Length: 272
Ligand SMILES: NC(=O)c1ccc[n+]([C@@H]2O[C@H](COP(=O)([O-])OP(=O)(O)OC[C@H]3O[C@@H](n4cnc5c(N)ncnc54)[C@H](OP(=O)(O)O)[C@@H]3O)[C@@H](O)[C@H]2O)c1
Image (cartoon, rainbow, N blue to C red; front, side, top):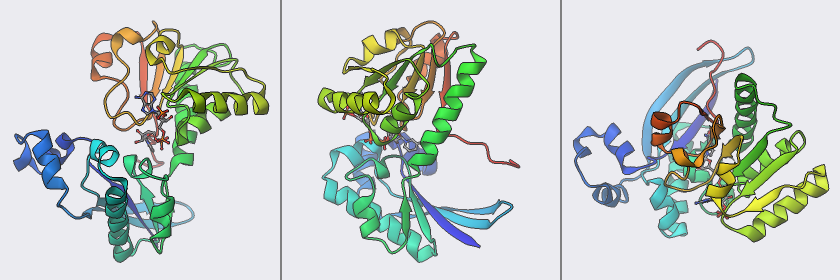
């Protein structure tokens, strides 16, 4: 039996009160203040994972810090708490641990965490990239859009997931815009893409203007608040929202029936 664990954390304070309903009416900052003192713990057990090749059992381990805390609190403190969550996984008997949501965004994307654990550590980002691209291609097909002719916008293009998505899609796309806040990093990425694929991608730090012209958007920033609003999107646009917390505002679903927003990195397993 293969044994694994996956570290999760509340994306916002509201997620904490879903698990602990007594905290439902507490102010967010108060919930966050309390969470700082809760050590990582086993959230639940995962059983019945069976394939033709192996059988697996695992655990979700909670690291009580919100996305905002992971970005705003001192990095050494956050990394130490994630390592403690990894130690819980080790004690449970996991042989590999996955870093969920912001636990792989903070610091050096898992390197320090891996150095401090005795089991294998993965961000799972390669799989996220593969599923986000596959989902985007299928969504484009469904909406009758030709990826090779579409204007593709990657939000969070210089990130771990964004850069890989951009580099792969650049082999099939003709029009691509790379978006993030740091323009120097964007230019460096655009240069690499040009050298490896011949595609001259545009770069901008202006998310709103890039979205206005986008046929297909891959949204994968580490922003803690939504950055895509209903008025930003072109009619008929497709958005693959990979980010957690999501980059697409809830208002998009309410106000834009003409656009298709899909969840990136969500996979239906065989037999489920
Ligand atoms: N769905 C899934 O299965 C799954 C799996 C893994 C990760 N994720 C999520 O994917 C997201 C990205 O993860 P990652 O590991 O690729 O993170 P990362 O390496 O830290 O990259 C984040 C990217 O977002 C950009 N960015 C941050 N804030 C921005 C803003 N306000 N506007 C525009 N760009 C912004 C950053 O560049 P600048 O700093 O220059 O702006 C960078 O390009 C996170 O939300 C994470 O939780 C989802």
